[in-house]
Image (cartoon, rainbow, N blue to C red):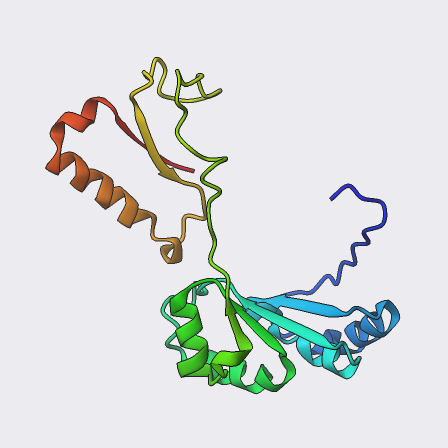
Length: 189
């Protein structure tokens, strides 16, 4: 962010709960007077309490995905924590149907307080080129022809991101269609 009218405030929060920073957050919210405070995932959910105490009118909480410690949302402790903070959240945003169902069924959030906003891809911006593809700078597949297909992902190499499933699918595709071996490439960044 390069705008001069955007201020960054570092809380220097260490691991663990945010409760120790409640007084500081309360002062900050009162001083700034925001119309909206947006938290994301369990690690930041606690900030809705000082926002509520500072009378911030809208407190939005987004559930982006599963934590490494609870990749399927089954930990009762995490469900209970989310339930405890539920009264302080005015609106939830779920990034998938699965997360929306989790919030309703496991956390007890009314469907009317949830919006589902899916991650998406702008297909007009990220579409296959109609002509000859320009070389990709730094691409390890030197001399890759225009008909080479590069399949891949960019993300943390964590079980929750499941990079092995992509690798298995790639191998399976080559088993089912061995002729693709001359043009199919896998990239995991």
